[in-house]
Amino acid sequence: MRSYYKMPQNIPDFKTKHNYLDDKGLYWDKIKMEVRGFCVQYTKWKNRERRNTEKKLQAQIDHLMNLLKMEQSKESILKLYRRRISNKRRNNKQNTLA
Image (cartoon, rainbow, N blue to C red; front, side, top):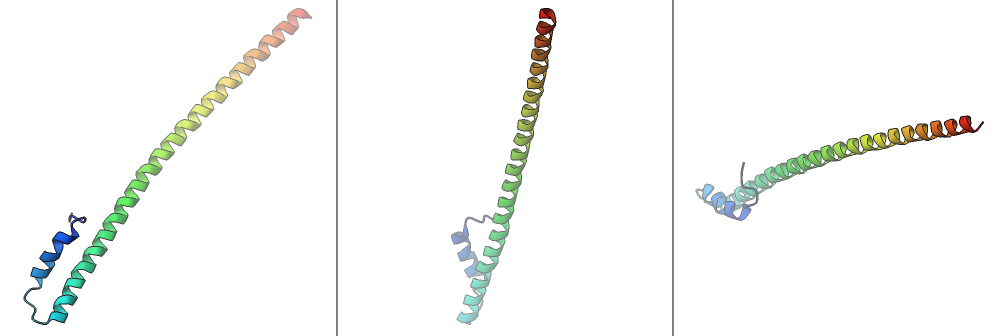
């Protein structure tokens, strides 16, 4: 992988790569072409990194949401059992009083 954050250090390499050209216009166009190609590759890399980060974060969110749903369902099951127990106690008290 190229060191994408070191663009200023790559410019001298671009200049020496096309040093053989006598036509200054063509020389300048070649350097611009190299810089443009570098920018395209950097953009691809940056977007890939962003997508990977987004996927990781989305996976974490999904995992936490599933845990939250499980905890909520556990809580609701506990509430249901507590209601049943309290209803049974009420019914038992009513039956003993009657």
